[in-house]
Image (tube, rainbow, N blue to C red; front, side):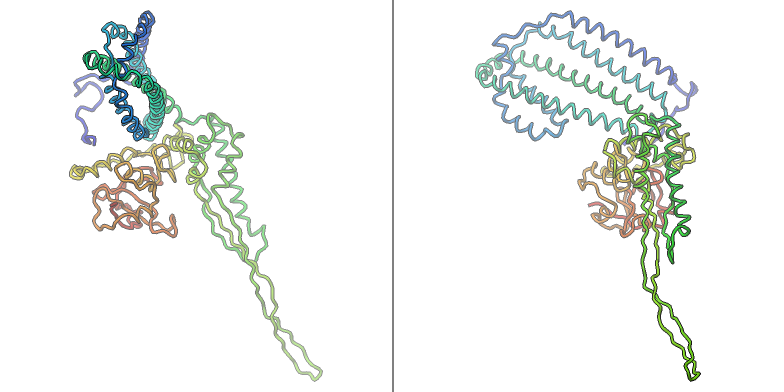
Amino acid sequence: MENRQSRPGGASGHGGQKFHQDSEQAKLHKSKLRMENREEKLGKARDRLAAQKPPKKPGPVKRAGRVAGAEAHAFVHGKIYQEEHDNVGVEGGHFVERSGEAALHYGKRKVKQAVREHPAKAAARAESRYIKATADYNARKFAQEQPEAAKSAAARMWYKHKLKREYQKRARETAKQSAKAAEKTAVTTEKLAAQTVAFAKRHPVGSLLALGCVLLLLLMQSCMSSMVTVGNGLVGAVAASTYKAEDVDMLGAEAAYCGLEDELQDYLDTYEETHDYDEYHFDLDDIEHDPYVLISMISALHEGAWTVDEVRFTLQDLFDRQYSLTEEVVTERRYYIETDTWVDEDGVTHTDSYRVYYDYFICTVTLENFNLSHVPIYMMTEEQLSMYALYMSTLGNRPDLFPSSPYVGKYVTNGPTEHEVPEAYLSDETFAAILEEAEKYIAFPYVWGGYQPSTSFDCSGFVSYVYNQCGWDFGRLGAQSLYNICSRTNSPLPGDLVFFNDPSRNAGKACSHAGIYIGNGQFIHASSSKGITITGLESSYYVNHYYGAKRIL
């Protein structure tokens, strides 16, 4: 857990500070100079490496020394590799262990060989430093050009998610290649094992020297690969948070969608004039949408820049998914009493009454607004949903495009809620871990159906993800299912769940919303109006819809 107490001396300028703090522009300039300097050093290191003579191929005795002991460990490590294959971190650690055990049986290495390898090490080190400097410069540059994207919590987590996934992919590929190489080596090991074991026992010092060289090279290669991935991913992710389309096309798409809604509204307003039924019943949701949801969806579905003409069919598809209009006509058999009066030949007046049957038509018109923000989960891939969440977290870095949207106040004007958690609560290690995980996602946008950082979250997706990251394993559950697996408590403790019931949002179920109680009458949750935030239980809406607290077993 980070220290929540503010540090002294945080004011800008020289007053009250021990050290001068450079401006962001000065830091950017220094970062550029550092990058250029390390590029120059990299060039010199590569020149020295190119001038280095390649080492001679090892003789039969040296080749035998390098594979000593492999026969004794091949079967055991093969089984361990099978179990660790899905865990890159553990697998990597075991790879080092495996290399170390094999290196203890390697043949004697001459000191001249280690010297010959030095230029390669220097070049690798120089390249690693250059990559780091380049990544730092590009990150600072884009942070200045697009400050809203750089400040976004969701954007930062999106970077990490994408980089982690890419690194794991590369690590798995490397592990597979290492496994294939080990399999080929095992054939030679069978023939040379008997000779090499005895040789390694006679030369333990040479074997340890070889181990150091091998491990150093492996570590340097790993650092270079990971830094390239970090640098490229950071730059790409910052740029990806901005809408790609031109203003005229985004405003045109919004106008076209509003045109579809206007046609629907006009159809309903004149319904009784254009239809011929005896009775009408209307059950109509409001016709409305948020323009940022619309543009973020279109931008996620259409990569790169798009024009309003290119997204006409998408607009119609979104409209058909958001609004559902049903017209049900019921025919009733009704009658009225008809009376006939007549006088017979004797002058007596008679009255006859009888039923006259007719069809009576009752029309019920229902309009359901599914809420446009609920649509993405049903039509987007995980990658598209990730991009949608990123656009919503930054509003495409265009809060000025639709200033009347409530999202401008949600994510730009207001920002995350300040909160303080007493240290006494944090003494509980389980709750401290839950809170630390939950706080990572504050200010993430609410995405209906979202269940992980890359897609952002809805309320139950957020709770499920946090707890699954902290030792539980119950998968992705809805609010009602979370309620069902918990035990009732009348005195919630930090880390317990709180539930709410709003029949208008979740008809037929007891629970419509869930959050994590953090003490002092506060809970952290995915709010449909504010994203991941902290709210007091005394807030009017939550007081009126509070359903109870429960504890996850």
